[in-house]
Image 1 (cartoon, rainbow, N blue to C red):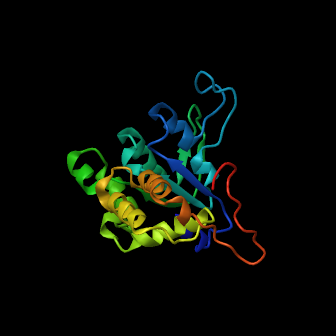
Image 2 (cartoon, rainbow, N blue to C red):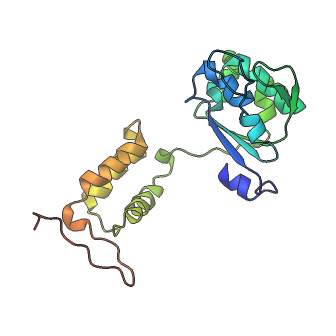
Image 3 (cartoon, helix red, strand yellow):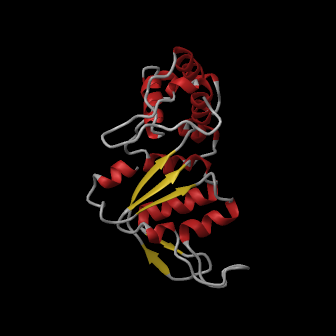
Length: 212
């Protein structure tokens, strides 16, 4: 979503990110549409939602497959008509944005099950980009390993044991491959392999107190 935004004519406008799976259902409508003062208990002031904040730019809806069905219908209207009402408001607000969405689930299957609106699916699926899971990209394991080491200032010279352990985890043997891969890198690399990558003017790595 960030790359699409930065390479578009909307790059000078904001990109707004909303994780549909991380926000409680009761608050999702206010998060997207905004609210008027006094719309509900605790709404002590008016607030703009993601539709208003993304006007002229890009709205990225992550995990759109988890969006409740009632909100799917409301989102479809906004995408089609470019207007909406704030929670507790009567006036129509106008907006225009590029919608980019992502999901971990099979939306076509959810449409068949009645859990995702077919009209919304065909509206947002104008261009689909599938990112293959890491288990289908075994060649990327070593690259990810080296990149992660460099991000921590370590030289990518880990042992074969470390590489094998990382491949076992990141090729699909653990449900949470991201955290498992990082955890494996920390555990599998022996102290002798943790050589800090050095550049011009960078000092040698000093041993920790009490270590040999």
